[in-house]
Structures are given as structure tokens and as C-alpha cells.
Amino acid sequence: MPFTVARDHVKRGELARRSGCNLETIRYYEGIKLMPEPARTESGHRLYSIVDQRRLRFILRSRELGFSIDEIRSLLSMVDSGAYTCGEIHALTQEHLKSVTKKISDLKKLQRTLKTISNDCGAGDEPDCPIVETLIAD
Image 1 (cartoon, helix red, strand yellow):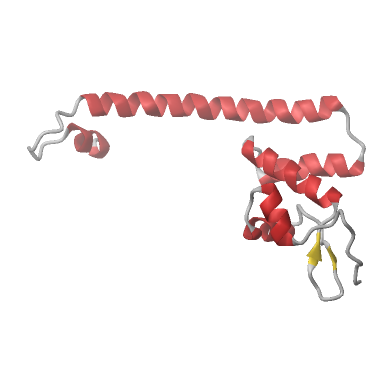
Image 2 (cartoon, one colour):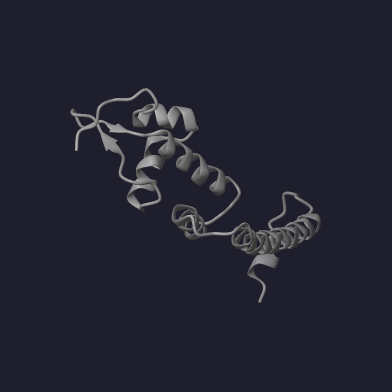
């Protein structure tokens, strides 16, 4: 249904500029139904309301914090329904925090291993390389 342009509505390019993401990202979020189908002008241009703009900021900030698409979908579902408590949001965030903490631990272990095998290497001109030996060892 055609929509009359209101001051608080922006086209996709302006939404991308304001949010700091690219057009394809917005299209992607629409395609996977994180963003609703926007209103359109009579000429077919998409128009995003203040609510749409806030929703995109929510999604982008959630992604910056490492939430998965499924986690964001869960958060948005709770927010959209209005039937959530701060405790439920906290619980979901705590689960995400556990996952992030595990990833950090795994990355620290990876860092230590890489430092160890790099320190064992003389970085010389000879073909014998302890890094290669470590990588192909059983």
C-alpha cells in the first residue's frame, strides 16, 4: 500500500548512512525477517519509520556484542510481544556471556600455543621448521 512520506521516515540509503551499515546488511535483515517489511512510497521506495530505525540499531548493537542471529531473534520476539521481564533478558544475556567467556578462554589457549611454537622456531633459512613439524605431528 503506497505511503505518504513523513518527516520521520527515511529511505534505505539514508537509513544505511545513519546506522553506519550498508544497504546489503539492511536487505539481509529484511530477508531473514529480523526487520519488518517497510512501508513504501507510491513510486515503490522503501520508507523506514523511527520504530524501524530503532529496531535496526538494536540489531546492529546486538551483533556488535556478539549475539547470534538466533539470540537476536529471541530477544526481538520477547521485546515485540511485550511479554518479557528484565530477568528473562538477563538470563539470555548471561548465557551469551558464558559463551563469550568460553571463546576468550579458547582464544587465550590458542595464543599460548602459537607463542610456544613460534618461540621454538629460529626463523632461519634452513628448511627444518619446528612450526611445520608441530602442525603435521600426530
